Every structure is written in structure tokens, then in C-alpha cells.
Amino acid sequence: MTTQLNNIDHIVVLMLENRSFDNMLGWLYDPQNAPPYDQVPRAQAFEGVSGRPLSNPIPAYAQGTSHGSVPVGKASSITSPNPDPGEEYYHVNTQLFGTVIPPDNRHPPYNRKPYNLPPLVPDPAPMNGFVADYVHSFAHYKHREPQYDEYRVIMDCFTPDMVPVISALAHQYAVCDHYHASVPSQTFCNRAFVHSATSNGFVVNAPFVNWLFT
View 1 (cartoon, rainbow, N blue to C red):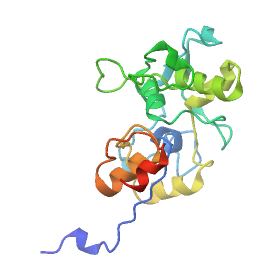
View 2: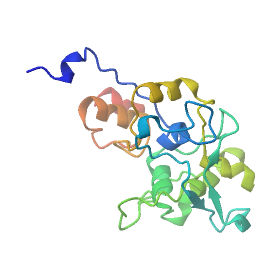
View 3: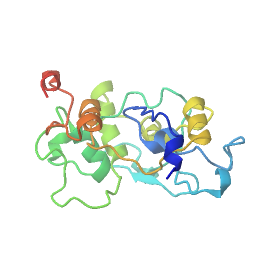
């Protein structure tokens, strides 16, 4: 019996890194976009950021708390955000769960146990710590506390005209709007999962020698 799978000769896996779906393709379809990105094709479902009241709270110790929260926005530069957000396991825990445990993890080396993981892990994750973690990372890289306009960029996402190639691929072929990293962390542990369904317990890139003999 023939199936549609018989028409497929190759499956190409393109692995990108350190970018979320929302950041790259959240604004793929929005009424304010130029065609063909002003509406979802063929009335299909697409869960991006358009029309959704998404935001993150501002931590009490940050500047600009009078704003209350940072809403999702549209990036103004392809190099945004600068500096880069934290991508190691403990940074991503703060981003996912909005927790800094112990409080000293607001400052380097950030990796004190339990690595910002809450005692009871909520499911689904509230996704409410992107602003807080970026405030910490900005202060570390820039050696000063960020202003509101400097940390709010962490909630900005690219529009199709800013990422035309990946937007065209998503529009012409298919895109998954619910995909997740196997390990909420850096590159090597997730690449290991793609090839072998395990990272052998490692959750960060360093030390690199771990990956030579895994």
C-alpha cells in the first residue's frame, strides 16, 4: 500500500540555536505585516504573539518599575538584544520560572544550587522571568544596571521583514509553533539529544572535554 511517505526522498533537519520560536517567528503572521504575512494561510491555526496580551513583570530591584511590566514588542534591530541573554541551565530556569534561588544567583557565577529551580516545578512553566534574568545578565556584561529601554528589548521579537529567509521557509513549508528544547540550556546538550536522545546528564557546554568522550 502506498502512502504519502513514499513521496518523501529526504528529510532535512536544520538545527538553529539559542532562539525561541516567539523571538524568531512570533510575528510571522500579524494584520500589520505586508502580504503574505498579514494572515495565516488557509485559515490554519498559528500560535504566535500577535493579538495576545503577553508580558513579563519587572523585578522590584530593577530601574523603571513604574512601568509595571514589559509587554511583548517588535524588535528594531537584527542585533537585538545586546548584550546576549543568559543561555546556561541556571539562566533558563530563571527565565522559565521567574525564580532566583538562592538570591545570590542574581550575581555571577549564577550557578549556586539549586540553580534557580523552584522546589515545586509548575507545569506549565509561567515563562515570567525573561526580564529579570536579562537585568542580571546586562548588569554583568555592562557593569551597570540597565534602564527600562535597555532591558525591555528582551521581550521584542523579529518581524518577517527582519528575518526574510526563515519566514519564507515557514510560510512556504511548515512550522511547529509548539517546540521545546530537550534540555533548557545551551547548544551541546541539545545536539546530543538529537543524535542519541541523551546528554549523559550534562546541562551546560563547559567543560568542553565532556563532549569529547561522551
